Image 1 (spheres, rainbow, N blue to C red):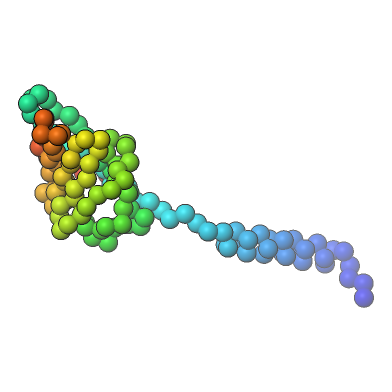
Image 2 (cartoon, rainbow, N blue to C red; image 1 turned 60 degrees about the vertical axis):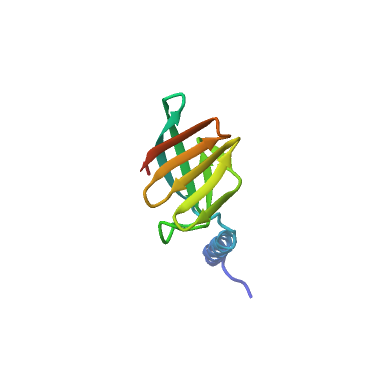
Length: 126
């Protein structure tokens, strides 16, 4: 059976396109990260200075509520490797500073080995 070449070219192109689409659709995709950033103005005692601290929450998917628990946390662009979330209170540490964030009132408080402490208000940047 002889099929004219002019009929095979479109068929071949269609098969190649279908194979490429199938290959692309089977590739795993990385989850889209939803990023929420807070800017916290923390007033430190006894130095009496204000430090602007940036807190970043990265959710694997868009959070379904303001208290979603599946997220990555970083403070001043430094990843935080552990945290405790209970109700509205998130507790973590960075170096020797113990940090507490109230997720409802958007407040920051911290303690640096009892030598210094801070408190401040946070605002949502994005």
